[in-house]
Length: 149
Image 1 (cartoon, rainbow, N blue to C red):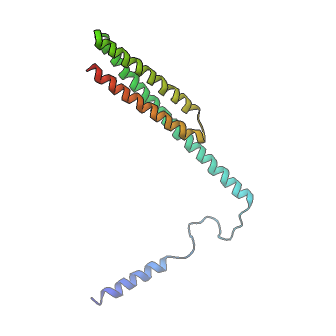
Image 2 (image 1 turned 180 degrees about the vertical axis):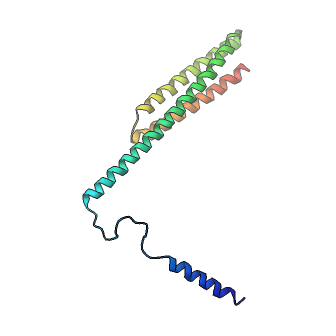
Image 3 (image 1 turned 90 degrees about the vertical axis):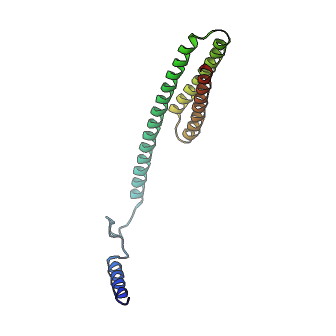
């Protein structure tokens, strides 16, 4: 038992000896003066990097949502083909469901166009609005699909 304490103490001393109070990874000397021009340059670099990041994420999101709308267009096309073989009341209900889908699709398309044009503070608001329109379209598509089965 007594032999463990000296080993633990020695290990702690080695660890503490390796730690120093200064930041050894700093590239500049600790006492280097910082002037306003340096601060402005760093701010510009950070702002530029942030703009690039946001633009890349915006473009990725828009591409993904565009693909999602195209996928839903395919489903709507399938439902339209199925509706052609229906008759009577079933055909009437199918036509109503497809008309509703068309309206929902147009709303989602309009929101996507808004999203493409949005920037800054409006981006988050328009993005949320688009997501809601897309959810409505997906629900309408599922609802219409259930009427065709």
